Amino acid sequence: MGKESMVSLTIHHYIWIILFCIFGILFAIYILIATGNNPPLVVFILSAIGTGGTGAIIGGIIGNSLVNFHKALFKVQGQKKR
Image 1 (cartoon, rainbow, N blue to C red):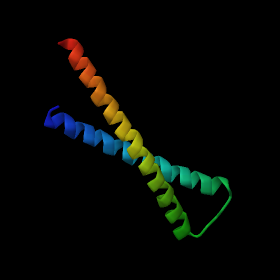
Image 2 (cartoon, helix red, strand yellow):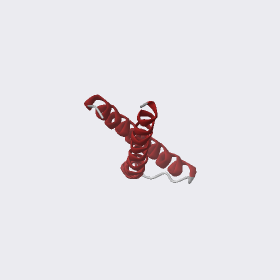
Image 3 (cartoon, rainbow, N blue to C red):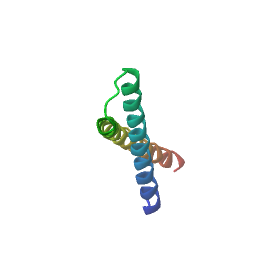
Image 4 (tube, rainbow, N blue to C red):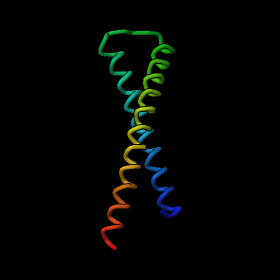
């Protein structure tokens, strides 16, 4: 596996982390609004960031799984071509 493909896979991994972090923050905002809680702004932001961190962890796991799946898929395709 070349250096370029590893960089590409790493970038994809971090893209998934960022996306899930954003989804986590949006989910926290949705929950706070849906429950009708109107907390102070600091609590609101901290809750969103905390949930976003959970989203980032989940995103990292999913991103890592996808990266490993793609690695395995490319190896299988490379062996079929030979």
